[in-house]
Length: 213
Ligand SMILES: O=C(O)c1ccccc1NCC(=O)[C@H](O)[C@H](O)COP(=O)(O)O
Image (cartoon, rainbow, N blue to C red):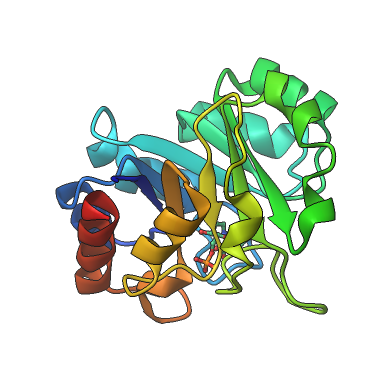
């Protein structure tokens, strides 16, 4: 079983090059100032240009307003916008129209009940991402290294290829793929040596394992 991978929160050429060399299908720029991985659209546009046509460029946003989304779309020109906040399906449709980009919607998961409403999203997204619900009081909605019970995904079918995320590392990604059945995986803190500091060797190991899982 092989899974396509997204490496999220890239901020340096070394880390981005490791992701591209390792065959990442998606590379993520987090545009959210509270994140240790935040990158302004102008900086991201320069950095991510080398990825264009080699991997899908994803702009990660959290309840961004129209002005910010327009800025991201015009400057970074992402293939996809990841909605990592409290957006609704109607908002996802607006974001697609406003930006012309595809949509990844993140659904935070802790228990079976958290899948309620998943079907409502399917017409409005290119991909769903099932990420761990962050612990109470967490400063960020994503990139916190929390994981959930991957058996909650086993046997489920979705209209589009979907991601499992949350607390993945080179050591556990194969198990996550086998248990959840995910066709795609996403990682951020699990390939870092410190918050916001990507480790090219960990990125390579993660991609290698995801490919050969
Ligand atoms: O990574 C961040 O700092 C971040 C901040 C705000 C919203 C989303 C963020 N990351 C989005 C991602 O796609 C992460 O890769 C995903 O949540 C998994 O993170 P991790 O558990 O650290 O692998």
